Structures are given as C-alpha cells and as structure tokens.
Image 1 (cartoon, rainbow over the protein chains, first blue to last red):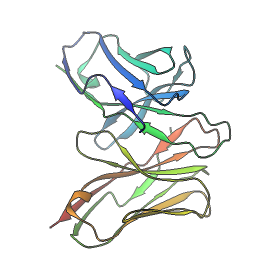
Image 2: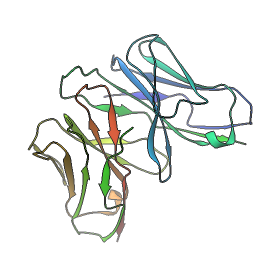
Image 3: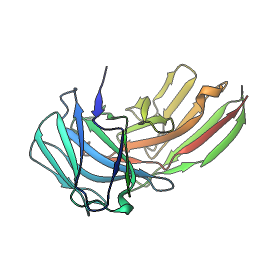
Image 4: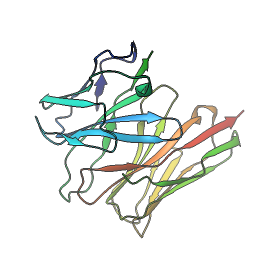
Length: 116
Length: 111
C-alpha cells in the first residue's frame, strides 16, 4: 500500500517558535509537495521538490522553508510561527511527469497546527 | 496557481439517492483524479483517470475524463451515510509535475 506519513498530527506552538513538520514517503517518488488547506481556500501549494536538495516555491512560500536531504523525506519549516499560519498542512508525493501520463498524487494524513 | 471550478459546493441528499458532481478547468489536463476527505483526515484517492473519454468505476463510484480534457465528473450511486465528506477533483498538467485542485463538494447524506 502507498504510504505518506506525517510525523505530527496535532501541534500547538507559540508565536515566534520554530516549527518542523516532517513527511516520509515509501514509494520512491521523486516529487514531494507541501500544501496548506484552509476553509474556503482549498489546497494551496507552499513548496515542492522534484529531487533531493531541489526545491521550488509554490503559490504561498512566504514564512516557510523546506528541506529535502533524502529522497523519501521532505520537511516543512516555519522559521518563526505566526497565528496566521494556523492551518491544516498536507504533505504529498508523486512520480515525475515529463509527458508521462498515469501519475497520481498521494497525500499524508495531515498535520493540524495551531499557533497561539 | 490555477484552481479548478468544482460544482456544486455542497449537497444535502437522502440516503439511497444518486449524486453527481463535476470539475472544469481552463487548461487541458493529462490526468484527472478524484479524492474524498473525511474531517480532520488527509484526502484519499477514489478514482484516477488517464485518457480522454475514459469511464472508470470503483464500487458505487463512477468517474469520467471529459473528451475535451478540460472536465471530469464523479457520480455516486445509492448513497449511504458513510459517503459523507468532502470530495474534490485534481488535474495534472502536461508537464506531469504540477497538480491543480477543485475547491471541493461537501456531501451530507440524510438517513
């Protein structure tokens, strides 16, 4: 079975704290993604990575950074958490495209982050 | 990034009724995907569509990849209470690296 595992399901952090959200996939996928999901706004892409040590900004990268040191692991970092980063964060992975069809994106269970 | 137009936004139906929802985009996609998300959980893949015109079933669920490659629909037949949740579509662009998502259809099934 396909598996994307997010290390923390529920976190409560204080404003200004550094926050790490970890994600591991077991499908040997090249591409990994971090999204945030807010009511009425749908899924918004924060960052994605198409290879180890590679990263690309998504639609809302401000206030976030990422790290991909190993193929199976993609970390999202909030350098200084703020209350407007309270949200559900979803990690996902997929195999690469380059014109190849038949690719699917798989999601983790989600991490609920509350910043107080 | 592009957001797909998904309708309806919400549905309230009686148990046993059929449900239909659809997604449209302004771009051509190579893949259409349908997910269900339960409250507090991550999205779970229901159906994947890879060819224009393709019709695929998964139990009581049926989805089709539109001929124009700019739309897809999902049908649920004979709904049951556990069908409650948010359903959303996703499309993959020609590069195969990016995915775009609908805003979701919230389904409530009344026993």
